[in-house]
Image 1 (tube, helix red, strand yellow):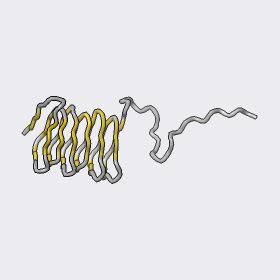
Image 2 (cartoon, rainbow, N blue to C red):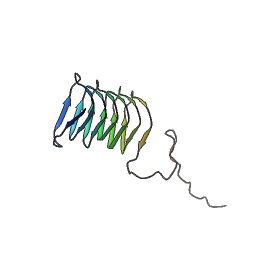
Image 3 (cartoon, one colour):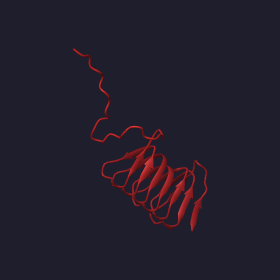
Image 4 (cartoon, rainbow, N blue to C red):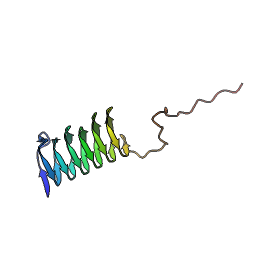
Length: 139
């Protein structure tokens, strides 16, 4: 079963908390989802997952806001915004990433705003990036 919603980029679709879907969703524009989905989501638009959303599947979108529970990978061309109390079990990949305090996240991240291959080792979050010290003159 493949549920498709074809809309214009300026429209907003809403699936409330009483909705349960088994199948994949494709849409354009914006979707606010507060229900349960057992399947994948694919869009070139924006996905807003509400507090009671439960997703068992992979998400591919332009941008995603997560407030509920996701068991699957999320790939966003622009931004992933994970709000407090959200639960995410899966890998995420985006150009920009925001994670609020109180999030449960188990997985790997790839955040690459310039979409280039890394050239230097990544500094640990507790260390400042290392910069070469200027040469000191001999006495």
